[in-house]
Length: 95
Image 1 (tube, rainbow, N blue to C red):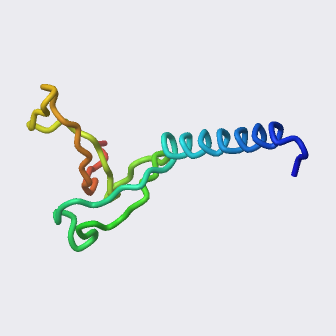
Image 2: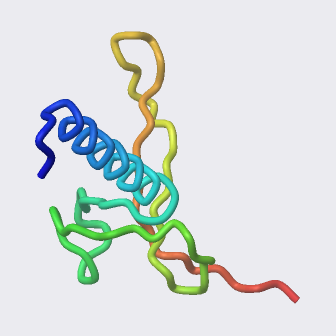
């Protein structure tokens, strides 16, 4: 591509950095892959099903949601662990 190997390396470094930033931004703010653990959502989702979580939408009735909560288990550092849980949203709009 370029005759100067330093310029070519800089171009590749820019491409890789831009790609990493785009992937980080998409995963942090728009979408996130999730793996189902446990059978509480059967028959909709089974153990080890893979889902793509959309972070840029509003929640409606009967949507599947994923939320984080602290568990009672304490890690070796003394802090409680944070665990993601999948559930179905069954809320009614109050009038």
